[in-house]
Length: 312
Image (cartoon, rainbow, N blue to C red; front, side, top):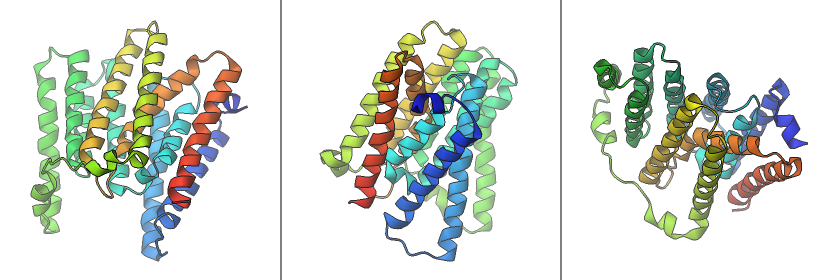
């Protein structure tokens, strides 16, 4: 049974999930785009796959450490399935890097609930977000998330409110130094333009927008249901789940702002979405209903991937 298998955290679970990700990544990158194999291209993609794998392990670490889900491997499963549901996310290198740094920031934000080393965590979270913005400029919107977290956990310490600015200056100085070495100082002015890159035609055409619409509806519904059911889980977990919800909301706005031909950073929303989907599966008590939900959750992304990549 699917639920009993992924309700455990054995190495075989992660081997299967990572193998699934590797296979479909290769299909999307090489066969879906009809790319010619070269040694340099293979080397680059090995690095990207390694980054994706590390992101998966980081996601697993975050949910376990912060106890925002039960002890199982559903979250990493859903994260990979979302990659299949949106094949474009696997070929958006900027989106993969941006998502990785946002997940690093998420680790710091959610760990604020321990009320230990708050200043370091705020600085680190801000730093990772600013680095993420080097791949998508609108990722700077996640700094709003940092300020909300400060307001929730330690708003009276005035120094906390200036830490994101310190992180900004630090990253700006280091980035400027590196760009100066390579003679690319114009990158800053060219990159941080904050224009709406939204391709309106993509959303006018139902065949292209349907996946995003279905995704939003499903995540919102399961998020509301799981939030209601988890209402008695304690103040600490509720605060964490609210921050997860805010992360998802900001990620959706960034995706809408940045979506254009060849650019689709929806992967930045996969972590909060996977958490909501996991919480929903965890509250289901009827075994058959849970199995049916998991079966559909696996079948639909694979089917969508096949139609979008192999049968296009």
